[in-house]
Image 1 (cartoon, rainbow, N blue to C red):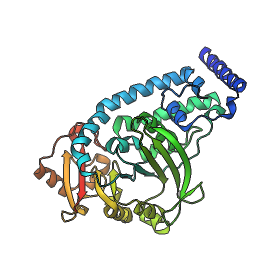
Image 2 (cartoon, helix red, strand yellow; image 1 turned 120 degrees about the vertical axis):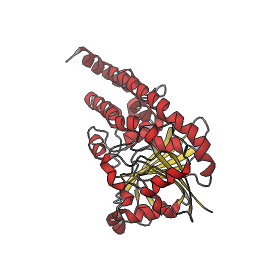
Image 3 (spheres, rainbow, N blue to C red; image 1 turned 180 degrees about the horizontal axis):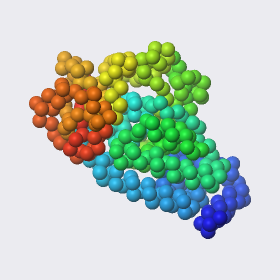
Image 4 (cartoon, one colour; image 1 turned 60 degrees about the vertical axis):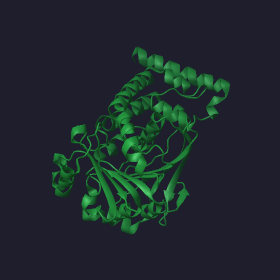
Length: 366
């Protein structure tokens, strides 16, 4: 056993002993402190996790996360905020719901584009698993969890999107499985606190029940913004959105229909709604959306007809990346050629270079 490993084990034993002496072993860390610990941020004074933040492995994790998020803020998020204030906020005031299908756990970008939302709905194939008491985990498991978070976040922090095939592997690698650890990190790094966490199921009629009792499961997280005092609700729902699945279990459809008009968000959506096997979810978004913000991988513009939608485009349209080259849109190329779009200062979707990024804003006509 090397020197640092011995020091870390001794320090954790000392923390545990101190907690026994003070009666703190029965007091679980708050969800906010768990989120901040996983995000590499200081926890609240007196938290049961406070001692873990003196561990060298966590300090290294914190430094790595601070560096990665600072670079991402400078390159992406700060520029998104400026663009949003000028172009997006004025036309999305009719809804306070952000509906982000196919986005997985990507609360970071949902909050960056729609910080005024009171309700966020994220959907992905990746499951929700309950988060264990971190103090009950072995040292090696904590190490593995922190390292796995860094690996899992690398694509979205560097390229703005998760890769589905990698998520399934990354989110099952450590003892903190599923999407919640990543969502927790994004919540903490967005400056929000977690007031409440519920594990939920969605009934076939779209209603929400507590506990994992149905085939469509997820989480409901009540958030608190300490700077404004605002309360928000974040839903993550794990579900297939293909026509074949939704025909037998329309729970997500019915739930989304209950939301009222939404600001729908689509990014790196794998061009699934170009296919006939995703007609149902495409129709749902066209039905419930007051506005749709997307790259070219979302809803093809032939469905955003001029009698119902006002379109505005930003950046450029070089066409899909090589993997999705079959989904080229001549109509979108022509629209860009005749619209004199403003350039983007941030990358978006699969085209992370701002000069090649495609951003489409569709607002429903009244």
